[in-house]
Amino acid sequence: DYVVVKMIPDNRLPPRHLHSVHTGKTFAVIKWESPYDSPDQDMLYAVAVKDLVRKTDKIYKVKTRNSTVEYTIKKLEPGGKYHVIVQLGNMSKESSMKINTVPLSAPDALKIITENDHILLFWKSLALKESNFNESRGYEIHMFDSLMNITAYLGNTTENFFKVSNLKIGHNYSFSVQARCLYSGQMCGEPATLLYDELGTGEDSSARESSSPTDVAAIVVPVLFLLLVTLGIGFVVLYMRHRRLQSSFSAFANSHYSSRLGSAIFSSGDDLGDEDDEAPMITGFSDDVPMVIA
Image (tube, rainbow, N blue to C red):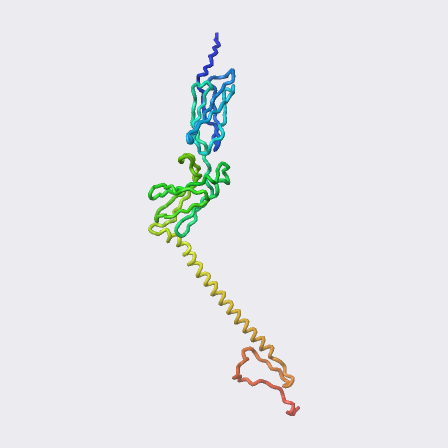
C-alpha cells in the first residue's frame, strides 16, 4: 500500500543553493534553485545587487518556471565588491551572497632605469590590454622598504613613468605599480612589483649609481688609446715603406745608358746621395784614345 502526498507550495521560502558560477571583470554568473521542486507556474524573482563600494543598489527581475535558474549580472566594475540578494517577488525570505569582481591586470614590462641621483620607473600602458581602463584614471605607485618594514605611498600619475628620489643607502626596496584605486582605495588594479636592491651598504646612492659609468669609462678610454696608438704606428710604417719604395724607383729610373759615354751606369737607392763612394764609376773609352788590338 502506498499514499501519494502533494505538498502545498510555500512561496514564503527562500531560493535554495545560491552561489556564484563564474566571475569576470564586469560580470558575474550566479545560480540558484527554486524554493520547492517542479514549480507549476512561472515564478518571479527579484535580484538585488548592492555595490558595497559606491553604496548604490540595483534590482533586476527574473521570471521563469525552471527549478534551476542561472542569471548573469552585467555592468559591474573591475575590482568591485557586491552583495547579491535573491528572493521571490512577493518579498519572501531571501538568500544572499557576496561576490568580488576580477580586478584590472597589472601593468606589463615594469623596469627601473638608474640616473645620477634618482631612479625612473617605466611600464607599458595598461590600456593596451584592458579595454575597461582609461589612461585618465592613472596609476599609483607604492614602495616597500624591507629594512624598515614600511610601505609608503609615493603618488599617482597618468604617465607611464615615475621618478623616485631620496633613496637611502643600504636599503632594499620593492616598487609596485597598479591602476589607481577608486572610492577611498577600495577598487584597485593588480600590482606589478619589482625589487630594487642595487644600493650597497655604507655607500652613497649617488656614488653607487655613478660608479657604473665611471667603470665603463675606465675600460673604454685605455682601449681607445691603444687603438689610436696602433693605428698611428701602422700609418708610420706604411709611410716609411712608401718613401723607401719611391726612392728605389727613382734610383732605378735614373739608371740609364749613356750614348755619349758608351757605358751603362747603375746605381742603387742606398748609394744615392753618398759623396764618399770608394768604388770608382766604370766609364767607357774615349773616342780620341786609340784602340790596340793584339
